Length: 272
Ligand SMILES: [Fe+2]
Ligand SMILES: [Fe+2]
Image (cartoon, rainbow, N blue to C red; front, side, top):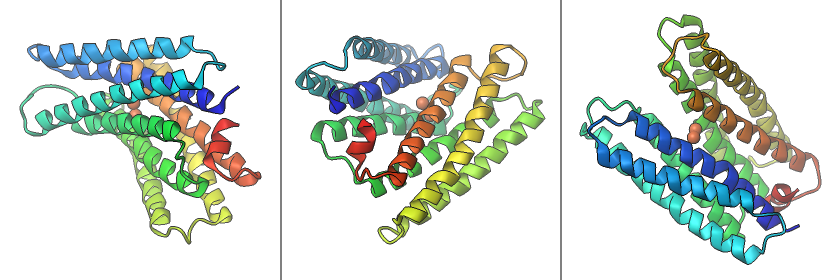
């Protein structure tokens, strides 16, 4: 079993579904008259739906050369959807789509996720994976901001009459903003901050908060599915942000294992 193949397929299976769903959300937020933007979003939906299907058809014993080409192809699709999202963000910020309902921060957010996906594929294909101490800081800076954004989206898409849930979402938003600042402080103190005790504490502390947020998202998702709360949150968006929190937890668990074990670089931890 080739670790490169396993890692590549895992990234593509997770993120192609995410990209597919972003296309759906963006399309739903455009106005009825924005037919070209809607059809462009539909086109990306089909592209990532096809990529997701093919990623599931490959087996772990697939030829690494074929997977390398697949990664390149998917990387191009990720770069293209990134460009589309940034173009849409530009139109929104210039007030050229008045009345559309995608928050600018959401459009920026989904473009950051596309960029992350593209970078991961490039790292895999070039074999240039960051050393573990850098990966720990960079992944946390990326995902803490993602989690902080999610809390803000949830807070703003719940009905204002859901006062207690809105307040909880605000608390998560503040908590993750603070964790993000801490992560940026640790990043600024590199490389001196990259000691095993400091990185372990950093991972542990973040994991406690991510677990709480993950549970909150799960509850919100279940309440939305059962039609027990008032909101304009698409049920699939509730599940989408829950899955992204699970992804972050999975990465934090790998970091924790690596810090407590003997494995020294990211290639090792990601292939274990
Ligand atoms: Fe997403
Ligand atoms: Fe997200």
